[in-house]
Amino acid sequence: IKDIFDDTNIQVFGPSKNAARIESSKEYAKDLMRKYKIPSASYKVFDNYEEALLYVESGNIPIVIKYDGLAGGKGVVVAMNIDDAVQALKDMLLDKKYGHSKVVIEEYLEGPEFSFMTFVHNGRVIPMPIAQDHKRLLDGDNGPNTGGMGIYSSVPIINKDSIDFAYTQVMQKT
Image 1 (cartoon, one colour):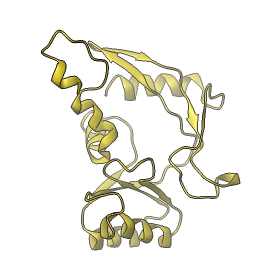
Image 2 (cartoon, one colour; image 1 turned 90 degrees about the vertical axis):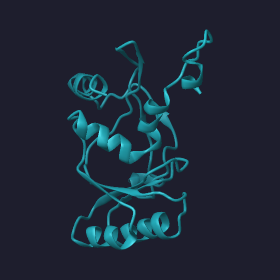
Image 3 (spheres, helix red, strand yellow; image 1 turned 135 degrees about the vertical axis):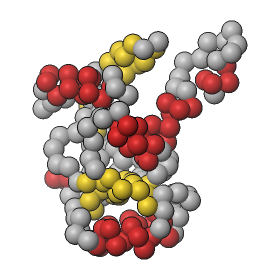
């Protein structure tokens, strides 16, 4: 809606349509990261179940499979085995569980994860405090991905160097 009001005297706070695509399309976000040399997991995009299945079966486990679109926080599967990967591909590409779209299959990276949001205005990037959410359902992170069941901030396991790197190499470039 922000774009609609850009040429009026009505001020609206929010992302432009293009900026919102970073959240609404995994493929768009990954392509943007590649274009601006923002560090990220390697990936491939598929809209064909058989091609995606061949890629996953070629030995790329564990792997992360993401629905390319909004899925209510449920469109990401961290597949630690081939059965989970195959089921995710069936859900997303054959059964159209979240709609008619593609999947982004990413390299699995291990390590702590944090959320880093910023305000952006006229070329200025203004950071908010980092946060971390709990994604896995069961104790010991043994359950399925939930898309976030709670969040906390500050995040003591993330050091200042990591935050500075994220600011300069991810947020400013974006």
